[in-house]
Length: 220
Ligand SMILES: O=C(CO)[C@H](O)[C@H](O)COP(=O)(O)O
Ligand SMILES: [Co+2]
Image 1 (tube, rainbow, N blue to C red):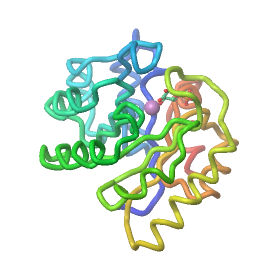
Image 2: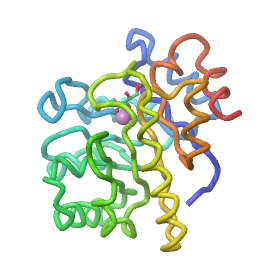
Image 3: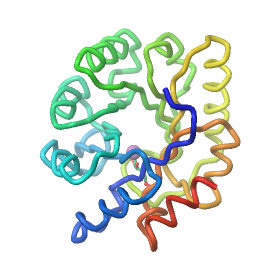
């Protein structure tokens, strides 16, 4: 697992009338990943992309496809998105009733299908419940907004979760990445990085103005 900071621009905030041009800008930027938010209109009150759209992004880019499943049935959809080209699949523990046996099974299934796997926790979920599955995670995603929409404000009070993950990783000699998602911009990213986040999702910040310069600003 790489140790340097990774920027994963969220295409939720892209201008879809300019999709190929904007993906070309991401390809030319120092972003290494592309964050793809799958929302089912049930787990969250918004509806986004299906697997065929991911296939389209894969044709336009060699970036690592970082698929964030905000769906009520992640066990059904994880294999479908891996088949469509997902490299990293993260799913919400809340969608599996915070049941770590179910979470462990899905992490194992995603690995068996050849993708990297991680879990996501919503702002109100206690991160400590995921302790039993940490050794099977390639990444843990801490939501810094309520999932469902781009353009919301960063919740700084999620930083203790990031710090707990850093401590657990060190204590248990694990190597998962720590990703934050929601409200990351040219100011808030510093708070996240100082707390120990190494993987930054950014949507509205990256796609407003110059995409390449905005990605660079998150790497300073
Ligand atoms: O998962 C998400 C929302 O549920 C998005 O990845 C996130 O909101 C990115 O958008 P922004 O950077 O504008 O907050
Ligand atoms: Co996301």
